[in-house]
Length: 111
Image (cartoon, rainbow, N blue to C red; front, side, top):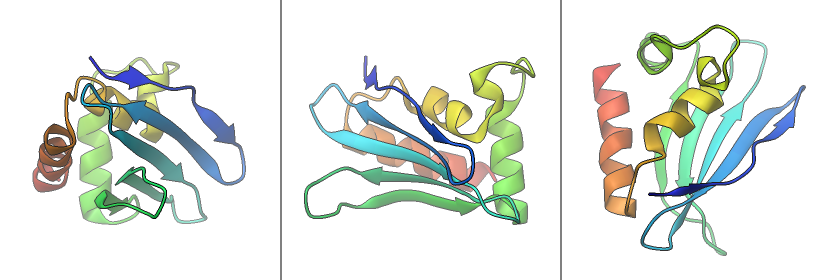
């Protein structure tokens, strides 16, 4: 099972978290806030950049649908009811980068 790092939260900018997958690779899960709602991103974490696995603007119909699906059934005061918490919850069982890539495609496709 993947190891979820601590959530780093900036009330003005958003929040992020690093998830270490079973194969040792790391992904950065990020929620950037802005006036319209922000965006959710998942990217491979490497010294010289890495592949972006998911980049969804929350004010778009695709982003709204993805967030609604990810937060369905979450208690209103739980971390899973937030964009970052919901995205981390969806990825916390990934065993490899390929698994994370597939889950990100599924999040985008269901939106």
